[in-house]
Image (cartoon, rainbow, N blue to C red; front, side, top):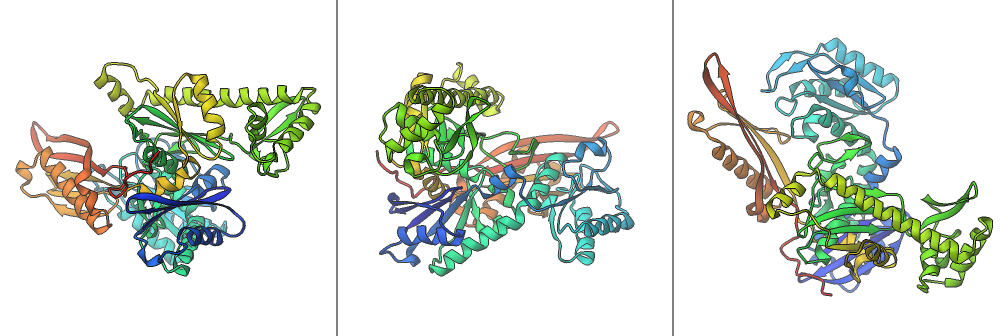
Length: 559
């Protein structure tokens, strides 16, 4: 048995998969604390079944996404060692930022030590401000993490209660600003994420599940819950990623499609190219800062079925806030759902309550109720269409998008809208008609996030840096070092083979060994090292990945 649970803003959904097929789905509104919500979903999914037979549990959640959107994360200090190059002001992404001397070159050699007195001065100021979460990032620390570790040791000696996050442990690629942003936002979201992880562990313990627990990441793959405690930022956009993987599971067609997930408060979109999700080549963008978090190419809008309708300065406004469910379901104010309910005679809930709620708002705007409903429907559809068309302009700059057009020698054409979420059945057919494309809203679309989590397979990536002159290789982020065999004859193909070998070994250690054969080379570069008129060595950079996809056990859900 396989379980998938999606913890959203208003409800917790779950699915049970037996023998590769979906057997049961559950949707529960939040009524108490998080542990209680997860327990209720687990109890209903496992009713009449033995918990010990569960082989895997995957959870997706909007927790980190919401923390970042509302800036409710923990106050965090950022200690940077930028070395030589751009002015320090370029790196000031956090209110509490400290710059230290010190430098590492691109080969991992320390060219300037960090003065101890500077480290201690920064720590004392952080303590004075009462900050207990600290991120530390140095340029080229993924090649040599010793300067970061020196700062971390000093923090633990002088401020043992502080939580320390290192850039070298959260990001494995070149680009110091992105590594700094990744470390900072990881430290900011860690406290709340660890509380969530503890809630999940408690729920699993109470129900006697012995299965491994995994978390859905922003790239549509999974990682162990325990690993997520060190890398909470990888769960950013977990909810939209779950929607996307759910769309892949529900729509086996190899089409060019847009997944649109319309929930209660937000709408998320993603692109499927011949059935495969498009990835953001520059990583997840958070508060205007690009990070080293692998992510799907996603876009969100604060517009959903429960978006409240109100009058502001004599004009209709669709609020970004959710005041409660739709009036037809007992909510306190008219919503987008109520407008569609009346305009298209959908008979959702108590349709008379929708009519009454719209009539009151329409009177304040000097409009007829049906005129108001029509205006809401038009505004919703036009905003969603603009969101999709705007994202298409951004997608055109993604390498995978360009490659598709070059290979097929034609412009990309949208072939289908795939509706996901509770409000999809109400809105997506109208949006598809407006855009002139076919659509699919599967009967399981309201729980597609939980399904996407349940059937997503583990992902893993690593970056290998090899220097034949130094006769060594480094696996960034994992901190693995080794000696290059036969450096005089070592070629790019050898570097790729070494990277894939190391990936397979790590995958086996992390429980994803069965997918190692499906790994791929994403980046392979070679540079010559020249001294005088002679080549003295070569540098290789190779990035390999077990790409996102569906687990082998999944057989589909039917029509």
